[in-house]
Length: 136
Image (spheres, rainbow, N blue to C red):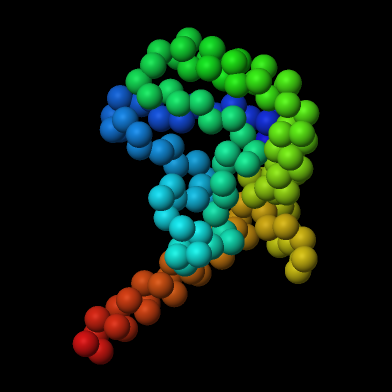
């Protein structure tokens, strides 16, 4: 991600999880939850915008690898899609590294800053939920 290569990430495929269970990569947007309804809006990522996501649903590693290769060949033939993915990849790449210093305002978050913001939202939502339960 940090070097600008569009990643090929195999979706699912681990026998310990039910078929169709999404793979939970860092900052991944929850499938099926509208971005507007999520308290984490603006803090999560749509991985399909910057990576190839072939379904590994119970297949062997060689099947999954072949799927990534097919997706890569397809992407190479679509210059506009590849360009859009690379632009999005450049935008999200800082979220996968830790900066030495806290990023100044206006600079994209690094992984630690995004974690800090995410935990602040989770704490706020939990606190509001508890306050509502106690006042009822």
